[in-house]
Image 1 (cartoon, rainbow, N blue to C red):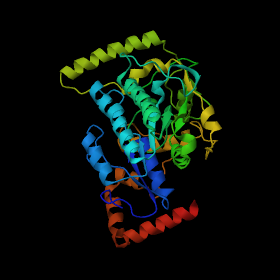
Image 2 (image 1 turned 180 degrees about the horizontal axis):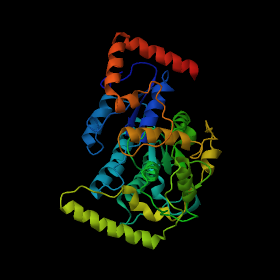
Image 3 (image 1 turned 60 degrees about the vertical axis):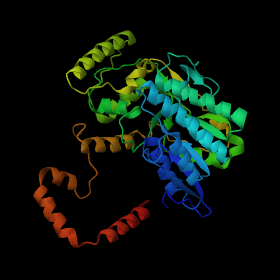
Image 4 (image 1 turned 135 degrees about the horizontal axis):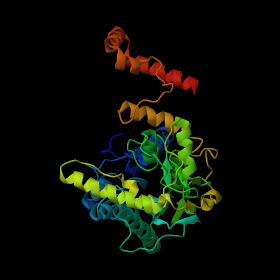
Length: 393
């Protein structure tokens, strides 16, 4: 089905905004593969539908009248005030108004950034809206407040889902948890920028689509509600870092805890150096996540009690950041090595035909092999491969 033609079947048609990110890509895959007989999903890119252009949204929804909207699009956490305001806040409001006028559910992905620091935080807790909040936090908080207002005053059917530290495969950007992992794998973290007690909650991106699908099918229970979608048990940041170090058999980071005042001073020096580099034409930036460096040293854990008390059943309750570590490490090390972002690790690499090694060391032999195989039917080989994968799974 194309985006220019609304569905005429009995399937529900959903619109997913922000389909290129980790969360959006995971949702797209789920609805395309797990709900093929009941749901169709469209994920317009920013050229077709920009959250910064209300006319784009009007034209799109006038033409394609969906059964629900999911919004997981965000501006980068270090975006300037204008972009944060237009994408994270105004974009959310525009989509909510479209959903309201169409009389359809609106699923909004929010962030633990709107919560204070502390342990076992509930859905009712939020930081106060003040002018000095970071742009990302301010815009996400305002979005939540306006959704509540539209629900109470206009009857908007919405569900807000707050995520903590998200983990999962197929994230093409190096951000969040994957930025932490990359720093360890690249051996760019000589010591620990945290303390022994700082704990945080984690969100499994692979489970989220199951919850959203369930919430869409049970609107009476989930309409007008906010849920923390997090693993039940928080994780100490220092223990996670040292566990990844152990998996990779690295010598760093050393188990030396840098006090926050010293870390903050070091970041200020680095920030000044980067500004000097920028003035002489060198594009150098600190990771956006370092805007929240203070949270590395303080605990923020989200209560999962409301989620666990709901009718939603966790499809894989045993899955946590620790049980998924080996998969995450295998996936991202392979990807980053292929992109020449990190050096090679001394480990078994899954390449049945050793084509990667031949490309590196014996390109002529690989070329000859490829030419010999040119008579093999391409589509037939793919079909056989899929059949084999299906039997093995």
